Amino acid sequence: MIFGKQKASSRLGETVGVNKRIWLIVPATVWLVIFFVVPLVIVLIYSFLERGTYGGVVWSFTVGQYQRLLNPLYLRVFMRSLELAAFTTIICLAIAYPFAFFIATRPRGWRNLLLMLVIIPFWTNFLVRTYAWMIILRDQGVVNTLLQNLHLIDEPLNLLFTPFAVLVGLIYGYLPFMILPLYVTWERFDFSLIEAAQDLGANDIRTVWRVLLPLTRRGIIAGSILVFIPALGAFITPDILGGSKTVMIGNLIQNQFLQARHWPLGSALSILLMMLVIIPVWVYFQMAENRQ
Image 1 (cartoon, one colour):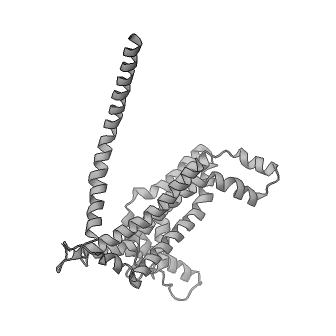
Image 2: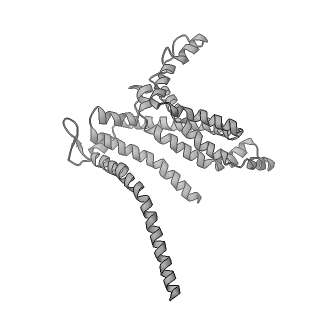
Image 3: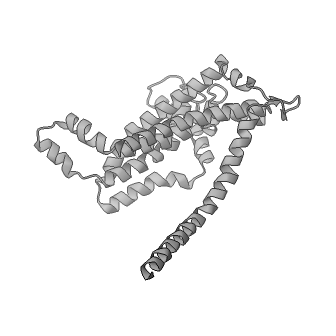
């Protein structure tokens, strides 16, 4: 009888503990529902409505907005956005991978200093930093002035308001998001594995391919997602450095909501952008699950 009472008391304690843990997630759940789920549902509903005569929406459900996305004009914008986001991710990875390795192999004092230099740009407003690139890339800017003084060019290069300027701005803006995850990966890396691979006869290329890349894969994937997703939806950088010549999905959405006042089409574009963002995240979680 006593044993039965102890068992019942233990079950009651477990139930109370579970209830306490459930209450701990209530604030986060309420926050997500109010500020994520509800706005997402509103955008999804608006994407199936029609535009009013003077803006707003007409409560007539249709799939016409999604059919309009097949317009070659929009398809070109999508492809340009994917291309710039992919190039931004690849170039950031090419720069950040050896740089993060360099930081992780320095003495702790130098390591902290280099990390601070990586983080310092976040202390300045992103809009201000983007405008600074206008000064650097314009016809009378730093780059053209330097090249002309070195007699490498006779006339200023057309750098500003081009896809090249947008790519440079995206790389500059999102490079720290690639460096930091890779640095964490390198900091935990067991460098004795490199010596072991070389002792077993592996050359430098084989060591990189068979040891370094597999063991730093998580940092590569995490950094790539952190760069690709915001680069795909960027609108400040292409708006300032690309002008009207380099429109990305973010600019298209902004124009539909604020200028054209075509909320249903802007909502459909937002849903499409979200789907493009979900795909790499889903692939990452699938790969993580398969490795376990």
